[in-house]
Length: 294
Image (cartoon, rainbow, N blue to C red; front, side, top):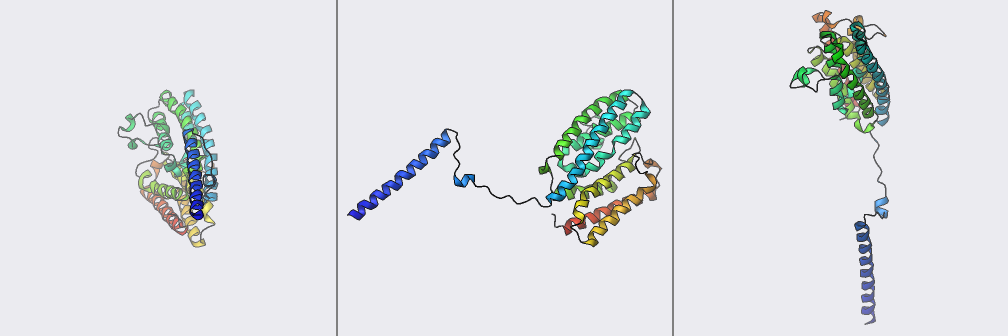
């Protein structure tokens, strides 16, 4: 009998404790207060981001370029406002290089990419689209239409877009090894597959400038990974990159933004550029596979 009474008392104590605990938790919830428990306060260890150091090294380079781009766009606006067509053309060309490298990671900031560098074919209404802006809108107004006044508002807007780009580059959550290699391989493909056939800089005739900066941007983001690769794979990328540079060497001058007008190149010279960029693309695919980046 005593055992049964003792068990009954023990059961009642346990039941009372459970009721009190549930009551306290309910009151905490109703009062919107947070009472951390051992379970809720424990921190789950996060797995480190693969290749975080390599990604950050590449981003630091692009952030520097974006700061340079901001200054160059401000200079472009000033040149447009001056009314001097020769100065405006030269300043436009000088302003083009930085983003053509940063473009490697366009998938990480799609809106900024469209507002900075989209060509008319990207929009259903072509040049009539209100969304067509940035460098290629300015290019047409300066080199084709000779209308500097109309170009000024686009230069002003471009400054804000570059600032937004800087914000995106400072947020590392926008980037990953997989996404970044997709960007490198994609741009190496885009040069021969679209930019040659589509005349990247139709009106300024500076497509070679674009190719050069695209390749340099690609290589800048690949470089942090090079030491992690087998020498044969790394050498293949280096050889391909050198082939790209060699394909346009006679058309560019070190330290000068402007290149030889693309329209002056022969079909064979264009073919050489095309083959070199595909060679770089294939080498980058091999590098991505060797690094086990899917």
